[in-house]
Length: 75
Image 1 (cartoon, helix red, strand yellow):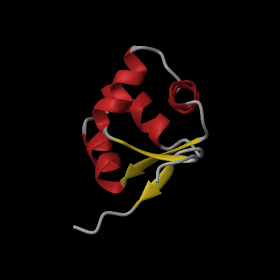
Image 2 (image 1 turned 45 degrees about the horizontal axis):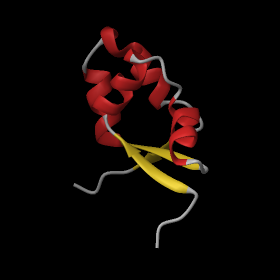
Image 3 (image 1 turned 180 degrees about the horizontal axis):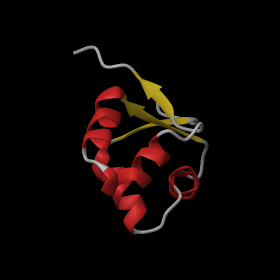
Image 4 (image 1 turned 135 degrees about the vertical axis):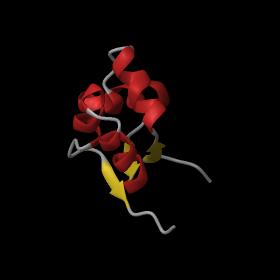
């Protein structure tokens, strides 16, 4: 059964969409789901954002936010 707190896995497109629409990720998730949310980012997503260069500096800063949990990839 699904219930709060919700664990939300974010990808590069999700982070960039939130930047373009000026939405704070954690508060936006809570507003949408009406419950506590824990955002997650994988090591692969962090690597992809870092490889994209200085244009995605804001996205990297958001992904490194202490409220966002990191997940290790097993592949």
